[in-house]
Length: 446
Image (cartoon, rainbow, N blue to C red; front, side, top):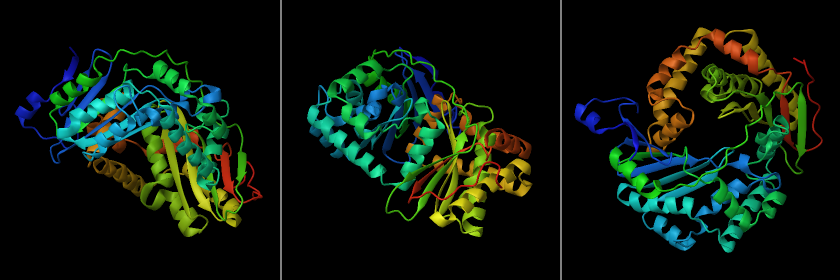
């Protein structure tokens, strides 16, 4: 029937307790059609969360239909060959459940929350909308209108526009440079036939991941998923290889003027690394030190608090299936923008030139290790962790190994990864706010 990696029956009889989910408490099965099912029992509440993904995303969008994957995902619940939108809505709302579906670059993800007693019926609905959507015209136009309204709002949002132009510039000519949500003209061009064709071509079960966490026995969870998805046999074409993304060769500044704004939002950064890169953990710790720990790390301490140059400032490392951006995000008064940029670059240079002191390093290690239990306090957090573990091939013992991985990182490794990836003279700076844009410090400026 299914290839079984481990069960929980013997584990329950052993009586052994584990601090975090691991190979002794996570059930993993691969169904004959390629779906990977992960199950973790948690009877502390009567609820269950189902999180997962399938391999259909914005990378599959045609160039003149950018936003197609996103519109497809959001329109799945507008009606199927078995249920109308109102029947789907009433079935979910009547039992206090929830279902969210959305597309990213590589995948379309879903999260279902329900009481354990309602899980079989809710799984049937989830499977129905994933497998049998009809994309009725009225429903498609309703979703399209919501997306277009959001895109209009984006054009007047300094933070979102700074982020959009940053990604477009950093990944120019690369699929990661596209907006997952699309653009007004490309979303307008999408037809119902486009949605049907996209679903028919790209929605398939092979390598699909489904994590079930909550008040249900692991064996029952696997059977419940197999009952509704086990006979799905659709297949998609192999995606083309993703081209490499090169970091900028020089300092690049792009400004998006938005009249009537009094604040400038900025995104500044470069191409980072993939999640499975061996240097990822050193980069994650470096990112914590730079702009996450406490009230946003060194950037918060110096650029915001000490120098008073930013309303907010933090750093972000987006490491996924391929290298994503490593960036600093901030909101500043226009007159403070040049000095704020200088301050950010100064903090990056300081991490390049001097190793992190032992106390600061230990504090950040404790922070990262201590944040893990917080993430695992809810069924949704555990389910998300299980999906990530499968997606990035981290192993069922990843959560158990994580503290030691972080403890083993040295100050030399942090300095090396910052020197390798964060060159403050070779970055894209995207600003959005009032015009004209203030003059920026040039390449090599302190």
